[in-house]
Image (cartoon, rainbow, N blue to C red; front, side):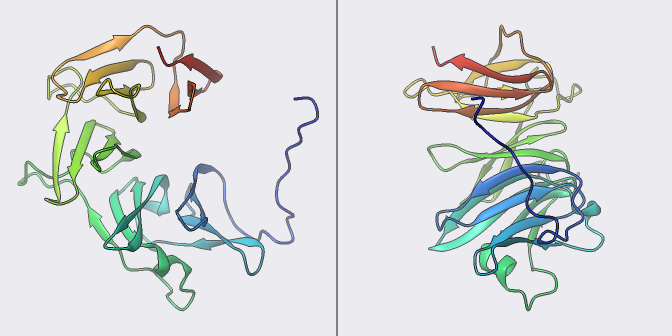
Amino acid sequence: KSSSSFHAPEPALQKLDVNACNQIVEDRKGRIFVGAWNSGILFFDEREGKFKQRIISPVYAQNVVFSILPFVENNTDYLWLGTTAGLLKIKTDDIFSLGLSLPPFISYVPDKLNAESISNEIINSVFKDRSGNIWLGTASGVNKLDPLQQQFQTVYLSGDKTIAEEINTMSEGPDGTGEFYFATGKQIFRAKKELDNFQPVPSPVNFINCIVKGKQFYWIGSFRGLWQCDKN
């Protein structure tokens, strides 16, 4: 709408060295987190009314956080972080504990000796389905994590492990279909939950960054703008 306005926070309140923000999420308690480029995580401190920065590690792949997924385990809040150095699991309260210079975390990285490890250390997106499974869009295929077994299943869209498709984003299909959508930079693929057959979805959109399932439509973010797609 023409009456809409956009503005950045006041510079005097935001003394942060942030070049790009990759994702913004809200957890069940209404807390806001931002995955940033070379800046770790930004979180909003309601008491002071401003964003603060939490570096994950001084040497941890320059602290690039592509994707954030809040989740609850045994009534404790955590964040899954998709980074350029693997998948990280961090207790949410540790991010807010300003007495901790660096929050403790568990990392998942590729292991050539373990076929059930993640397939690539670059994690572009993290997604949770209705069954509680965690999906990772990596630089070389899709990874599905069983949270209980802590095991990863790697899925290649072509079925050929020698072809490493980079997955930018994922989404569940329409309710009741049991389908999933996976997007590379140039193509969207549809697959049933068995993940044994990936079909390209005709689309005018390329350079796809994200797919969000809304109540009535799918929203597709790309380098060519924002697109709306009917669920049918």
